Image 1: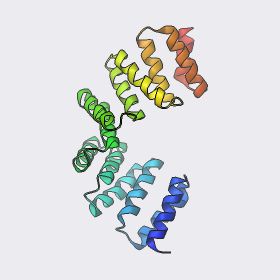
Image 2: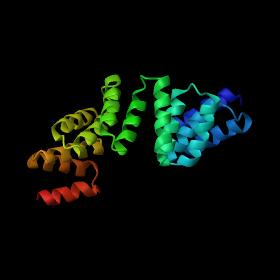
Image 3: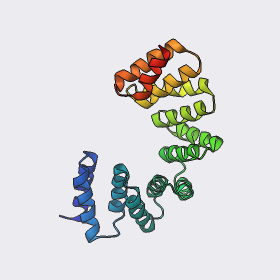
Image 4: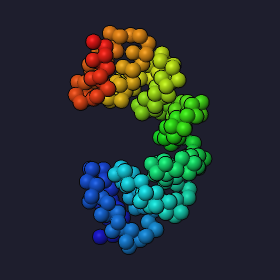
Length: 217
């Protein structure tokens, strides 16, 4: 089978969630062509999905060496480094990616997550807003921005972003949780109770939702 056909088949496995088959196919391609950028980048992506950050970092670093102009590979290398706790390296990768592609909404979002985790709130705010300017319906960015605002005791604007996230993805436990937390922070007890009841419907084993409902009475 030609390399292009092998890659196409591997991607089909990957998209269908057949990760073992996809991984084997990517590795087979790389056994014959160690510098195949697409196989490296996609294998790195798969390893990130599996939480294998150390190997993902090795594979994605090789992908960036092969194609240093790939904003996507730089962004994914940033994710791998963040997973390993290499925050400074992750930041370098995200910034490098954004220089290559300033309009990549997901990269702004991932950079925002990193900055928020480092307690660099103002910079994180700008990163999330940059993401939402490019992609107004980015659910995860609305949640991330809501979390950041709520952490800084700005419950009202946080609630607005959580509401937007819930409107876009009603089944998101993270969005509903944020909305419930913000309602409680605003003293809207009855509204918070209803939201947490909804969260339990979505995720019956959600410990915080059940604990909050017990506290609300």
